[in-house]
Length: 125
Image 1 (cartoon, rainbow, N blue to C red):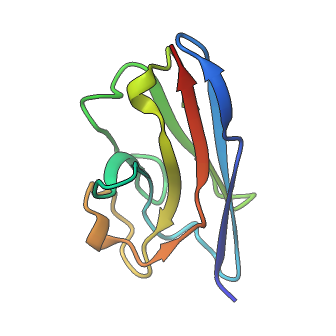
Image 2: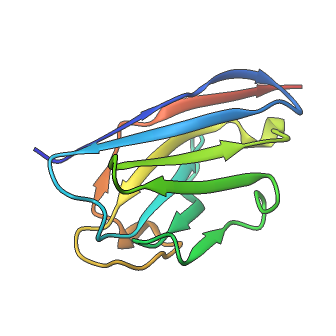
């Protein structure tokens, strides 16, 4: 059974930091691109960051560039998102995602086949 499980969300004050983790099981994820997306009520899911199979290509949304860092550890089948200098506008449910076949990093929701259940991040002002 393919499964992605996010953890690390919570409540933090503006300017603070959180580290999200995504644990993958049910298949080997080391050959596939992965990403982080977020969603707020009434809005479409939006791209946050993506990483290629070997970490060689990384993309960030302009809104998080310079504040967030995506990484992966293929030996442990995990991916992380270090979030610094958090803002109230970062408040959302954050989702981990993986591609089924492609090794590349891309910023499009429809490119990803497997999704976690999401973890809530709330940034207070």
